[in-house]
Image (tube, rainbow, N blue to C red; front, top):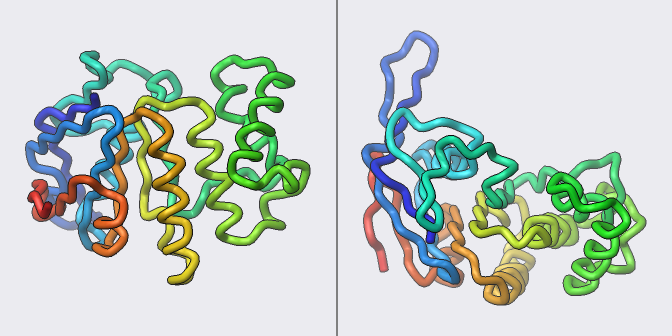
Length: 219
């Protein structure tokens, strides 16, 4: 289970007064549960995901996972996967090595990591692109590679930051269903951040809105 305990965070533009983004925020997400978080740009959704992933320290509060306080646990040891809206794939690596990267970072031998990456790409129907470059792929194909990379390390927590915002309407609908199917096969806590309520309702068993630093239950 992922648990957020009294998370608070302020943001301050140069020359301006501090603004509260997150105000003593509490949340529990069970393993196998997908929670959608809605909110407009600037509401603090991406900041919240970065705090959970360990990329940003909160002003107050703790992130817990499976009964452990993660405050002192480095990002790469948390076994959390954060998938950005801009894919964050490595253009100098092959598709296969992009997917294998997370395993190599965890100390898996490169050949073994590549074998697992090929298996994961086959699951996503992307095995024919294994030796290609990510910049040769379409937007939807890049998203599939990004999710394959996120899932290959069997994360305890999956964080998705506006994963389909750059894609057209029809492709978003297709990938929503596809991603939901892949995620359901892995028992992890999932936080799916979006500004699109249709998307949120299609993927989240719970829907919350981040408003003035707190989470409001929508369904």
